Image (cartoon, rainbow, N blue to C red; front, side, top):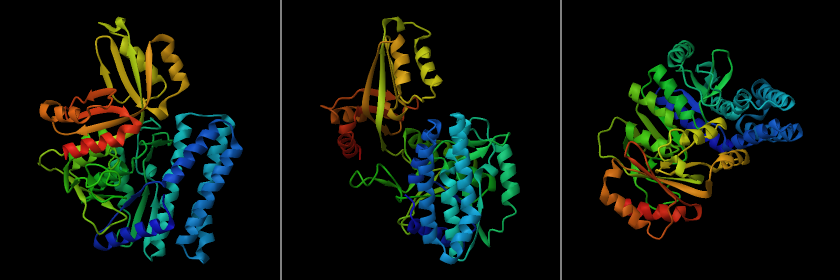
Length: 437
């Protein structure tokens, strides 16, 4: 969660970087505000406006307190009225309109969720200004054009490059630092569209590609990219350099350092990306670039998954069975993760947060389905791991005595995914990490 001290520390990191070279900053949202806006949207769609107002008030109080700790007290009221008050009025209006119309469309979801990072970026602008340096606030949707997919939009790179070039070329980078909100754009009808959650690094690489800048820096809580979270595994391996293709595999396997879509602008423009830590800015970093070195080994853990296991003899030689099942998930806007099939069975996984009684009822109406909940997904990434019989044997020997519900191999042959019980996941992760590294 962003606090005033964390914001001021980020501001100092930005200013120190600006002393060396011109920079543009893309800001992500406060985790606490993200959760509150998700809750706000839920109550708005249930026509519970009193609860919506209560959440709005708590978000506003938090930002008032944080701003008061950042700026001089004599400047506080003027800054609040000028930059923050109108944004809260706009958010309240959208929430009220959504609640009154009972409109749960993706268009209104995007309008509410875009406030995730508007407020945090405004706080950073004021923190930079308080340190006696100019800063301007820009909205990513004024720079990025997309299609009409409101919650997972595709970028129109041609129009975006033209807009970025036009708007950012007027900025005097020597005297000011532009701070850009993240993960949103506008479609051709001026509706807000989102580039999917966790998309700040994606927006950063889009802008860096369009401006032809020298590099991208991604600042997180932890320095380096590790073989696994150092807060959980003792003595993990840290990577000084990673190749783009390896990062693409890690991102798709669930690594939260990079958004999966981030990779394409990086590869197209050969942008070097440095992963650094806001908590320890003086430490070294991981560099992501074209790097011809032996493929790294890496593990990822993702908790709270659900498996759907379908068994039916009529599936044999069928041309419709799997399609009929997946269409139900598609209709309910639920992404399917891992899949395995045999002659008479089909198994797939989804996130537990996407599970609903409506989907269960619809599936059970037609198919014999077993639902297995409270599972963790562990992915092992290593080049051509599926062809390495010795490694595969070591993995399964290590897990002897533990129940494995599903084994899934990626088409790239670089990833194998295992589903195990949630309450055994960390124990299994440590066993695998110790064996592989």
